[in-house]
Image 1: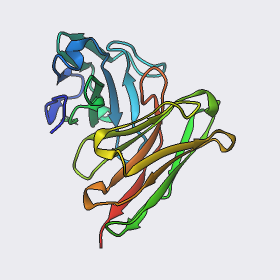
Image 2 (image 1 turned 180 degrees about the horizontal axis):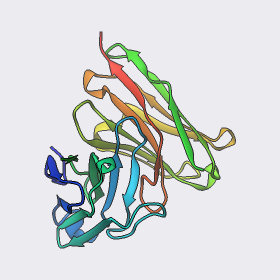
Image 3 (image 1 turned 135 degrees about the horizontal axis):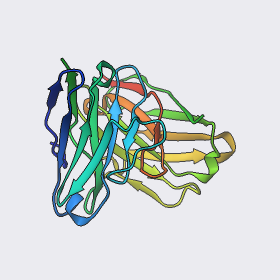
Length: 110
Length: 117
């Protein structure tokens, strides 16, 4: 059971917008710690997608955006493309357990 | 281009030991902290350990303390994870990652460790 809670799966048609939630608590996200997002594609090295809640590393399309409010954060992907089909993980810091991840969300592009 | 290449994984019996390596290139290895993360089959990501650029401080996830040891050799641009008393639940893909804006800015492709008799 992960410290951060994500939906196991989300889906959307090409061109649509989907959001992935990441719910924490007052000991992690709610304590003010940043949330980061990672993309895991089969057969590829995991990739940093969003850092510091809202920032995109260079090379990440602006179709990907992050937000944070209270004890939760979200990753939004607009203009869905087939290549976005992957597993997505949120990550933050917890005052008792150090770095923690969400359970991961599998995105299916219909 | 940052490159991280893990090696040393394989099949090991319960109670056995294994040493993973991570070869780094494309950046000044001695200037960056590093981490290890793992993903068990069908499960999510789990942080294992952190080591600063100078090897102090070092941090471990509570569940790994006492069995896993992280280390690095800046002269060889290499990161290591020594694992002892391995259990079936340690079966996972093990990744090394570079600490930058996040604890896991860049990742390797991982090395599979299977603990089974």
